[in-house]
Length: 135
Image 1 (cartoon, helix red, strand yellow):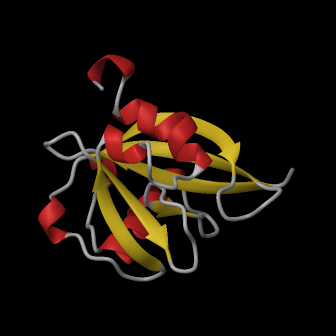
Image 2 (tube, one colour):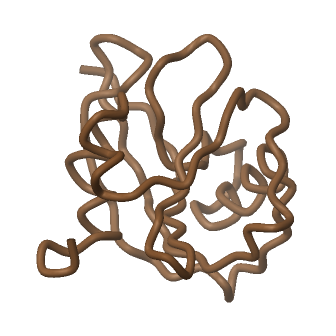
């Protein structure tokens, strides 16, 4: 199964909601982020993608590495996604949907039960944002 490498952000607001986005032409929501350009580190990829997709200006020191995770790709059948994930704190007031994004949402654990989500989000990233005891 071919691998797609990405960087992804797990962003939780002060109310414990997690930011998810949906790209144009897709149905599943996922953490913001994207694929690297040649020579980029995972952190550099995420900083660029968050700026392009959401207008966020972050420094590498504002990212906390969470690890590397593998799941089935949400939008590319027959592929796996290999994601370097980072936690980040942001000011939600400055967010704007741009580039290839169609929508963003701040979701609660209850909303995650009914929203179409990417396998990576369900299997790995949302459990990091909402530890079992905190739900």
